[in-house]
Length: 324
Length: 316
Image (cartoon, rainbow over all chains, first blue to last red):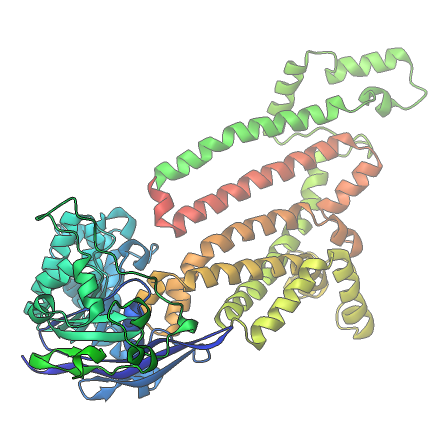
């Protein structure tokens, strides 16, 4: 269980803009173990997707993007690999699924063609062998009548079906790590639950690590073993799901948890809102990035940036209040 | 797919009907009596009346229309009023071949020039290759085809003496090599404007497709870059380019008059201009009908190709 598959340390990704280089994520570190689901949560624009796409090196335009830090996948640093080697890692060792399955599947290629493609590329499967394996994958993700589906185009399937197809494509080569970038955001609630169950099932069945990117804390509570909370391109708190949900240490995590609407209790109570707005990337506070919105912020917080430090029980937090 | 084809063909019928009515009225609404014009100034009233009766010009319009349509369907477009005894169908047919060959050749050049450079420009966005192609395409769009043609004649034919300045050699009677020698300059000047436009469309369309989620998905599967461009991206971008190819083909067929005149090619454009000068209404009518029908047919072909390329269209 404690096999480390992926270990990201000090990952920073900068993009070239008219105003110069902007760091979208800054010093992100975390690990994913075999058979584990790590939740990566945070509000829109906090760098969750940048983190996942940096791991895959999907921003490949060299003049436009700069990576720093290391991304170790079973002992290889992905960031220092030549591009051609990286192409062999993608889809074979790490796969990714996206939010919107309709726009993530190629509209002019059949489902079968798209599932067989990684098999052809990475496992050199041909003809009937690839077809049989594609059928297996469709069955594994719970698609009825897979023979028919294989010949269909993405627009002929329902939303939940498309998401399953995308998972089948991603898992075709049995990768060690699956990055699921908000896989259920575009689906309705019942289908969401089915897809999450499927991801949990496959995570156990194939013993792979999963990074689940989401802003839905309820999903994290139900499915993940560990969770990392991101704010403005940094991880502010990380730890086991029970620990973080029971005893959130960072004021931002507390704010997030307090913002979840509750069905029980006093319904007349107004929803909790974290004060202030997210600063723009080029107006980054020099101290703690959450300080402008933090109810506990001191001068120290505004001047100096805290580091992510581990506290009790494998929980880490980036906050001066926990430093004493 | 069969249903799609049938539906496409059925929707053409109203278009064809309207076009035929307009073309028919074209001659009947123009001032002047065709019979009087055919017989000349010193014709007697009796002669004119006799010719009227012979040509059926006194019948109600609807009867004349039906007669005209049924003749057209048999390939009979009447006889020329300017060149005595010459059948219009023969004139149009013999002039159509050079135009068609020129159009196909110029579109081939256009496609081979525009699509690869468009893809290149999209892949190297913001770099030297993109800038060079952008400048060239701007030049192509702003330069009229006769300027392009004159420039090419000056440079290639007069200065380098590499290709003949004008004239026509037929692909079937004179062979491929003479055809290429004589037709490359006209084809280039005809196709260049369109190549510029098509290149821009290819680039825009490729850029749009390349930023889509399914390309990201394909990259995350480990698909190699050239397969991404060729298989995943271009097949989607091609749908937009296909429309442009259709438009280009139509404009090369119908709008080649200037280039044909410039290079003295006996094509439809030349015939059209000559017939207008001679007020040869029968020929003008036949050419107008031909060009309108070509529009309809080419659009049908493009529609069918759409259905072939895009599974989403086929279904509905």
